[in-house]
Image (tube, rainbow, N blue to C red):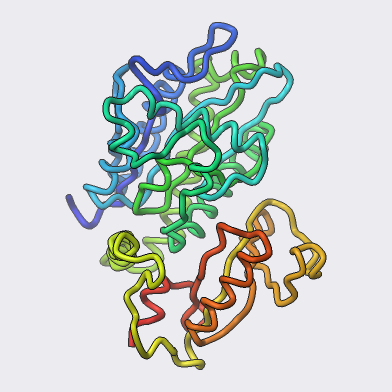
Amino acid sequence: QSNSKFIVVLDAGHGGKDPGNSNHGFVEKAIVLKTTLKLEKYLKKDNDIQVVLTRKSDVFIELKDRPKKANSIDADLFVSIHCNSVKNPVPFGSETFVMGLARSKDNLEIAKQENSVILLEKDYKKTYKGFDPKNPETLIGLKILQEDYLDRSIILASKIEKKFKNKLNRKSRGIKQTPLWVLDAAYMPSVLVELGFLSNKKEGLYLNSDNGQNEMAEAIATAIITYKKEYFTRKTAGNIKDNSKVKAAVKEAKSNSKRTKAEPFAQKNALKTESATVVFKVQFAAGNKNIKLISSNFNGLKNVTVRTNNGTFFKYAYGSTSDYNIAKQDLKEVKSKGYSSAYIIAFKNGKSVSVEEALKK
């Protein structure tokens, strides 16, 4: 692979024996493949972008192999394309998902649908280590180990949804977090785009049309190219791929997490960090709503702060300390308030970094 290229892996959802959603004669696997192939053509107009597809035809690709392909080539972005469908024929509009815990019943249902392909695979119980796409408890068990990439994923998702809304005048249902295996396993910023609802006949007709697929593909391509220009070429003129160290840290975190949960980074002593440069907080909630920072809104938690990306997505954190041991106590406090999926985040000189990086001397 050439390090001068910005590598984007495009994943057309479903395929082969897995048709995905079907409604009014519209078949998800066919629509997303055609849209993805069109997206590839638009991206290839930028000479600095290398595009890799998880599938180019109507074939079944196991879920675990989709992000695995992106990881193996050290890709910069992973974009999975899908279509929605529900029993109610009224809902319509696009929505883009990033990795996270389900924030609503509707999101959880989508997570079940997109993860259910696992059941079609051989030895899925062994491969996915007990993960059951139909059991909400195992969905909640998925951890956001790649918090370094979550911010960038949200930024890309925001750009895609804004293009749908402002350029195409499509209804945007916003950015959402939900536990999707295909995103959890990717070691890079990653999003899953739901182009629209096949259960809504009008929207299904649009997404099934050549014109609709071209427009949606071009909108996504424009968002990706804008993201590339802002977060890569502008940073380093000679080295576009500036996040390899972060990827290595995330892989190390995955390995460390298997050894022990009590001390995930195997830090036995000297866990205090320099207060002048490092700050630890506990992130416990995220979503599209800007919630007033009063304790009654957060189960009694008082020291709550919020971060936002362009006012479209909000992340709530508790506490602020330079001592990792105190941060661990804060984490216990947050979890005792009912936020079981909370995790520690870190900042160094005001910039978000991995906890591993913050703990380095």
